[in-house]
Amino acid sequence: AQSVSQHNHHVILSEAASLELGCNYSYGGTVNLFWYVQYPGQHLQLLLKYFSGDPLVKGIKGFEAEFIKSKFSFNLRKPSVQWSDTAEYFCAVNGADSNYQLIWGAGTKLIIKP
Amino acid sequence: ETGVTQSPTHLIKTRGQQVTLRCSSQSGHNTVSWYQQALGQGPQFIFQYYREEENGRGNFPPRFSGLQFPNYSSELNVNALELDDSALYLCASSPLGLAGGSEQYFGPGTRLTVT
Picture 1 (cartoon, rainbow over the protein chains, first blue to last red):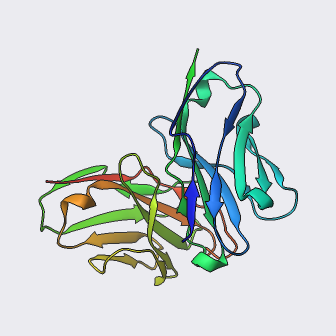
Picture 2 (cartoon, chains in turn orange, blue; picture 1 turned 135 degrees about the horizontal axis):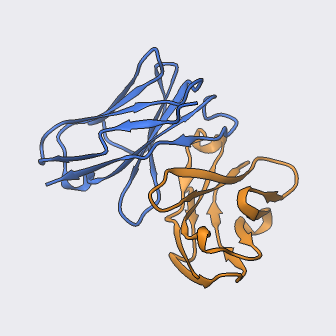
């Protein structure tokens, strides 16, 4: 079955620490990969996406993610987090095999201590 | 440019009742998707509408139904409400159908509580 797994449900970091949030997926066929973010009191918004090409994708606010096909992973990274990065982060995948329905991970709640 | 809007913001219903949730898509978007997000979980795809036709459905029973109107706004109807239907219902619009993986723009959601 198609699924997305986010390894950490809660992450707490201090400002300036480096961040890596894990995302693994189980999916046959070609995939599109997404990271969405939900800041407190705001809508879900797209952080970055991978469709094809360079597996290292850069998004908004200094975030990046690397698609490693052999590991079925799409981990999110940021070299130095800020207090304003406190939010919930969701990894999602779709593709032709699921009729392009987005399949979501359970989310990771990130808290940055000032 | 107006973003995706949803109404109402919050709703409390009794088990067995019916509910209608509404969504106005972002200007220029002809595709609307609906998601259910239970507490502590990621969104689950309910269905998608493209140019007023259902264009994909997730693993939800037929008592979850929808409509899309000529102006591309949409409704989600749930009949015979169950306690497990309590969740945040999200609407997302996109300028193309899901094919090609176009970005979806989300509304703030409707929080439904079934008692």
